[in-house]
Length: 91
Image (cartoon, rainbow, N blue to C red):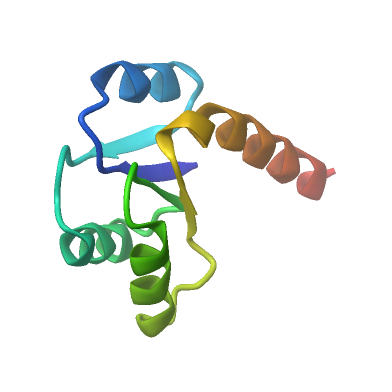
């Protein structure tokens, strides 16, 4: 599982990595840079503290509505849930 983290959240990046998630850490960037990186890196999710609607809209325009857009406060729960879904699909 791969995510782009667009927040000043080094501790979260470390926790996600410790949970087995590949993290592309950008820090603070604008939504267009965030979406561009998400597409280039072929991520499963974008983690951003702001402008969820704008990022979701840009992803949809880029024909990538399947990339999840989540807040930092939900990132670990999402990662655990997404990992569980992948495990069940393989069974």
